[in-house]
Amino acid sequence: MGAAPLSSWLARARAWAAGVPALLALATYAGTCVFLMCFYILAPLSRVVNWWYGTPPWSAALLREQEQTVLPPPDPARAAHVARLLRAHGDGSLSAATGINPEFQWFVTALDAPGTGIDGALAYCVAAGYGRRVAMAVGDPAAARADWPALAAAFTAAHPDAQFWHASSAFAGVLDAMGGFFVNDFGAETVIDLRVS
Image (cartoon, rainbow, N blue to C red; front, side, top):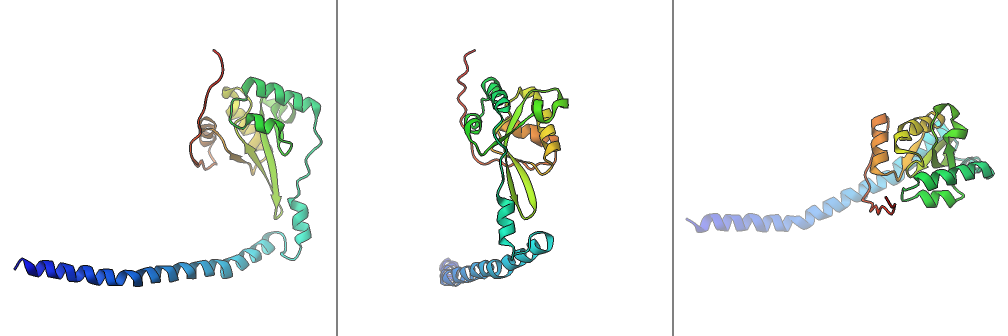
């Protein structure tokens, strides 16, 4: 009597193992169908949506013109102000890189939002395409941490479609408290504090 359940279990295991290649083939076929559906159905549909809401697909020259962001000429007073703020508050991992990279612009509260009463700056670049312009802030603000909420509010008031990239967990908490932003964690960052107390 003990051999019957074992033999039935073995028979079921053999039947399942025989069906595994068929299941794998079915999964591969389904994955291929989904890929082809995305490629042949959704891609042309997105072109129709882009045409309906923005740039027609045949005007590639217009699209290239929109995607080229013309940076304003460097302002020595703005650069000196940002350098001072970076020396005082630039302890983020991208502070030095954003300070010297010519692709970044700086939102300086003393110049761009003088009514806020705070002194801070935030590096950003502008992405344009399909009739939209999005300001993408990069890194933490160069300002006192107590001024981060007011600086973020002033930046989003000046750039309503703003996005924030590579922010520390402290600044992500400020953005989360403001509301209206989705905060995603992408990995860890090691912080070595080199300041002398």
